[in-house]
Image 1 (spheres, rainbow, N blue to C red):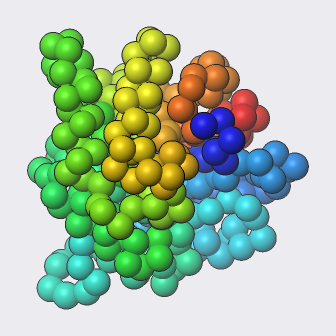
Image 2: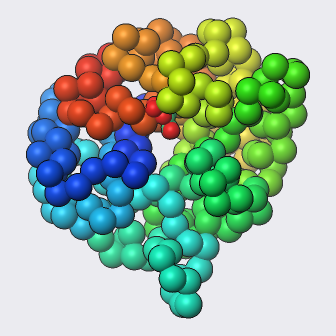
Length: 250
Ligand code: PEP
């Protein structure tokens, strides 16, 4: 599976104003290296910066994506943005089902699946997030949770090109805590086998990212783990210097 082209993705969450555009520009410029022939890079700023970010990174291999989308194309959904709107801003990816959305907005597996399908319809790559809570981890339910989330959140039309899976243990996000190498290897191996069972070759080629307290200090070790095909980074994607240190670890 290490022949899969890796992906480094950054998620700015609800951070970033126009004053942060210099960081986006610096990341875009920083990934213009020979390494960009081997890995894909993506940054997901808040929706307010999407259009200007894609323009700023026009001449960079850095792709720009969004952090969420509505499951419908348009309509009476105040405050929401559609996958079509993201594509219209030249965004190419969208994160769906992040644990913060599942928790703070009560997003169900079925809603996440509908959002991923909407992303596919708009020609976007969906980055579908899953992962267990601390309670589920401590009570040995991790693989059960992953099985359920994969079955329910990943749409039938998913392909290796249109879909990325991000394994993000909820308790590892923003906490500085990271699962053991064995835990990550087991989770990613399980996700891989479920994807292959359901999607065949498509599942074999689908990228599985690890996310949760990734930094320049641990990126290399994480990327060594079988079936870790890239990283989804929160806090350490905000500053170009930190994000580019992770990029350099690939
Ligand atoms: C995330 O929320 O996607 C994430 C991985 O956050 P952090 O890197 O800050 O733990």
